[in-house]
Image 1 (cartoon, rainbow, N blue to C red):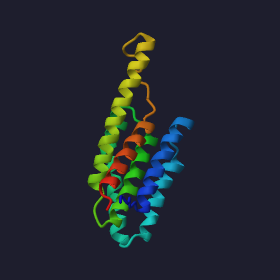
Image 2: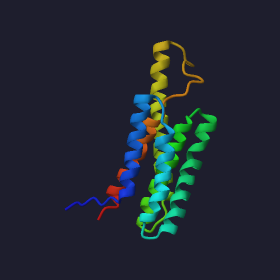
Image 3: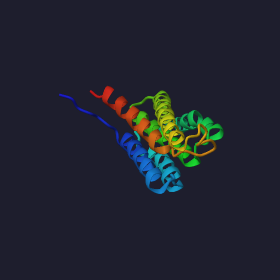
Image 4: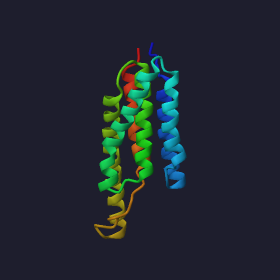
Length: 169
């Protein structure tokens, strides 16, 4: 019989990405309360870990890995700061979840971030095609910041869920 075991920090990561995607669609932005608040709660939640100091280090490092993976898109490709902060908070929650399994979350964070970026690239190329097709000009969206948190959230959630299913007893 299949049994899916998910530590609560992974549920928090999934919830954070779901809320960030909904926020992007409904409010057209991802607010600091959700992103920075989510990151702060992840750090404070390290107290609940079996090894709090180890968890604190792994949680913070996983957040930095997520930030380093996505930061170039903010500086060079117009990704919004809210999306970057959401990915940072996601990385921290994944790092905390992996610390419960006594492993580093850096590799999983990188996999989720790369998958999310691929989903974003495919999504944005479809949106650009649709916009340029309706506008009849090839550069219709040049310089426009596309809403990116929804595809990033989708990529992160799918990748994390696949990892959890693949690593269930």
